[in-house]
Image (cartoon, rainbow over all chains, first blue to last red; front, side, top):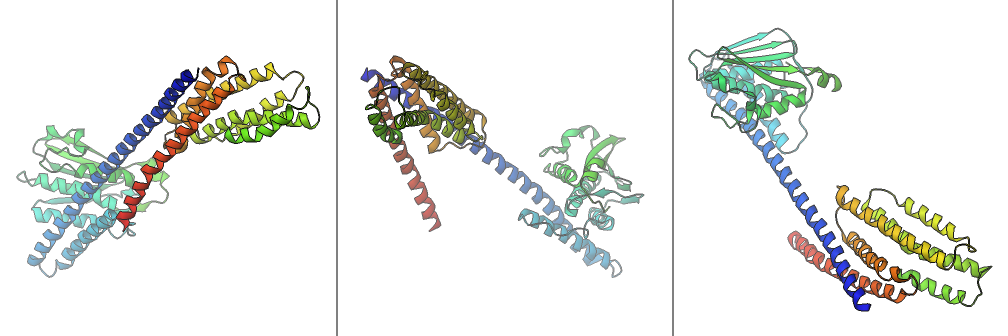
Length: 252
Length: 180
């Protein structure tokens, strides 16, 4: 009897310890997988910020080069563009460091965004058509709105520069922003272009993914249409996001 | 159980000197003994609820009070009937405890396995053996074997604590070394 109980008890205790050990191993594996996912998300965020930071720095370089050739009359405009690009870069570095974003409204005005577009287009030698017929509203940090516009414009300029006589058209209407430009191969522009790492133009495939995420944060939606060898990107207000978000700020 | 055994020892010795049915102080001591015996099962169940589920262990304490209240009727509940009640309570609490353990392991996402969980699982495992062999062959006559299982359980728990502490101390030293 005593041996029977001894063997059974030891077996049961061993089994109990095994249950606990397997549970601990499962928890360790789960925590490791969570940490890996967090690191991946962090890496993705850093890649997006680095991409946008590079855009701003390229603008600063282009503007500085342009400043050497500009006339005294154009200088204030060029310096204004330089300031905007530098402010954008500072905001991105703040975001990267986890600091609260600076009070906006300095950057995300219609004038500021158009100025950035002009800087881009002039440095790339692509004509710009700007039409303002209304107001596009957004919520949240101005830097996010600027990141959306900046990414869309830089893509448009880069693609239009490939095509002889290519130009970029920007239209700010009520509740929407339209950016259209000619493309080399319209058939390739399906909905996968919003995924990170997908690019048909030889870029890193980060810009549109970043723009989509930033657009969602400020209460916008992003879509595109391809017609007659042109692609039109539509940035549209999401009424439900803007209404639930509290006070609206006019920006674009 | 070890602590309660030491408290029960003088109580049981005293009760042996009184004729049944008990009355007066002897009856109070008899019911106190019943309360202490139930504490083995219900405090263990309460611990399982506390450590393995997000709920408070009031259910276990309420069930403890109900079970004890049933045994207050000494005329009906004594001897063999009381033995059966103890056995049923033991089995019921064991099933409920394993239910809490399974719930905690499978359903409570925030739960992190610790030493307290290991000890409770070891207790529940030893209880399975106690219910399968000594209790099944006679609740009171097999008492020495129940004690034997508890000694094995105690040794295992001491070993678990020693292993746990040996694993933790180097980890703490590593952190201190890194800080230095």
